[in-house]
Length: 149
Figure 1 (cartoon, rainbow, N blue to C red):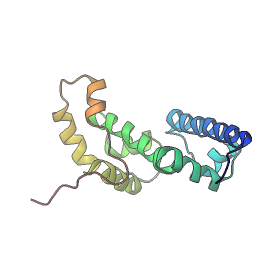
Figure 2: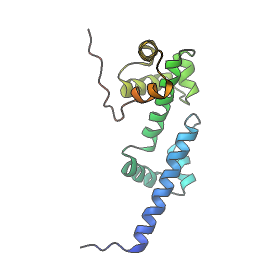
Figure 3: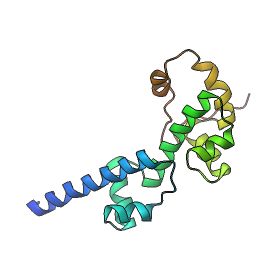
């Protein structure tokens, strides 16, 4: 039987506070160039330790969380309808249209161009706070894929 000492519990709480600061930074700076090494330096942790602990605490890697935030923001911009898919890609901090489109399709279940067309019709007249709730992306590749007609 392992007995948890007080210093281990204190360190665990410190790590959770650091992880929360990393998550908050991602939420604030999602459109900036962020990488795990820079996030880890800011939290005074190694990149490997940050990745393991972040996944343990939040269920996905820091990069996965960042991409989910970017895709959520992209969904809102695409629903608005005044920007092209390419403009939205760069607006949310992605530097590759191909990576953006692939990740968007994995999370949302359809390519960004199709989402832009369909979401504008589906959420017309809906308050933005409600639209955000009902259109939230599904994480970890759980989005249903459209079957070919």
